[in-house]
Image (tube, rainbow, N blue to C red; front, side):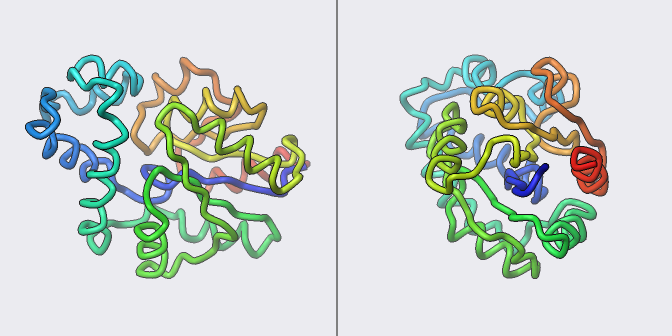
Length: 211
């Protein structure tokens, strides 16, 4: 029985793909890596994060500082970002149905709270900060341990290949969405528990799990 739904933020809740793409390119000169060509944006969404960093010559040791810079600049874009489709009504429905709603992101809580307030989407009970690109399972494990919840009572909703890998490591079910950063072909490679193609399918999927 699912009682807690953990949502990823960027790409799942908010339409921010182009913003992150542009911010990544804006720091290419500072960190001495290759810019992503706009014409390759679709292809980039079919390869993993590690493959992207390798393709554009981003050393792994530079990622923490790059992330900090991107998050700082991201703040300036918050007023211009839009929620994904029907995601607001999905969150409202789940909240009114009694689900615990959690948000997880490498973004700052300040940025996330600002977006939620601007868009009247303050449905979340808690915001978890994930500090690592490849260690999201640690964030999930810490949440399970600190809140003493059962893993079978949790489902994660995310848009990336790395979300699926993290959930498998944490033994948590995942609903992968196809409207985010990673294309469906890449998501399928990691074999998520469920794949949905529109926000309202999140509610239907959770209802199906709980039957």
